[in-house]
Image (cartoon, rainbow, N blue to C red):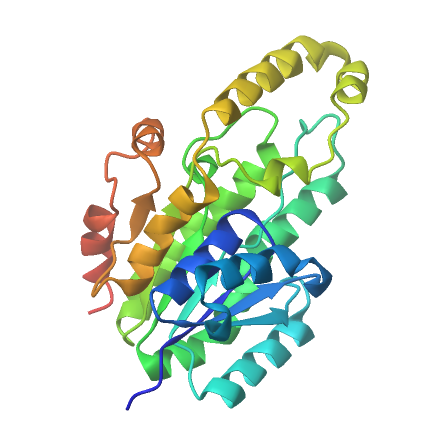
Length: 281
């Protein structure tokens, strides 16, 4: 008998990452669910028990900004399971602010988690994915296609991730590795709550930007009132994981497709991939 396929998912303590881990395990994958603080794994373990998939989920510590930790985690996964068949880059962190009032260090911190973390984990995983003819699935955002007010650093990082993955995809395909980006819109998860924003304090410090910030916050609160559940947003990730051949780009809802269509006419990425694939073959 062949052993179950193995997937490593980053950022699984809550939200989309937690739901994707449960979904992957339900699909029969051995799921290495990683998070920066394994002390926050109780919600995942409870959900796994309720779904009856606790035997397929292994929790490991992984901080995507720690190169040594990344290498150690990947080595352990392959030593324990014999192979790695997929990577889901999900870990991320929001950053709200506009550049005149944010520091360059704030922007660098957002890029470190949301972009360089993805780059580092993908780089470490690729030798193993080449061996298994596996795939890389990366959760970006509609903010990786449409820049959004007061999300300059976050959207810059997500745009960077999309460009990185779109460039990597045809090269990875030559060695048998598939690449997919998944673009959620608003998701009702702890991602926003974890920001710990003090809205009155933000508005008080916003100076000339206060009216725009107030309008943005009101609009955002309304949009999250109609948000997808984490399970709904994670379903396309599991589809991309289990499909014989996944498209390059996937949106998680009709709203997300309509929103990114403002920027992207090539919704599934096939036109760009057809073009660039010819450059490497």
